[in-house]
Amino acid sequence: MRDRTPEVRRFQVIFEGRRGSYSAYVPDLPGCAATGRTTRVVERRIAQAVSLHVSELLRSGEPLPRATPARRSDRCGAVRIDPPAVRFESERR
Image: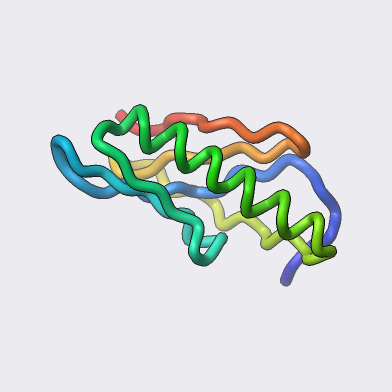
């Protein structure tokens, strides 16, 4: 079920890769992904990608998907959506 109300959401981010080649994607936002040479770059880029994705959904009148609860692991993080702000929250160890 989708909700049209912009509110605080925390979308799970899955990280993959190894030294020099990293990527991240958001399972609840199909097509929302980022790549980079460092995890720090990928964290910044995935936050930007989520911001653009969510902004476009809201602009076009589409509902935001509900965020699936994040699982804690070394491969996961979260992006917090508090319209209009978007920020990465690391949960990685």
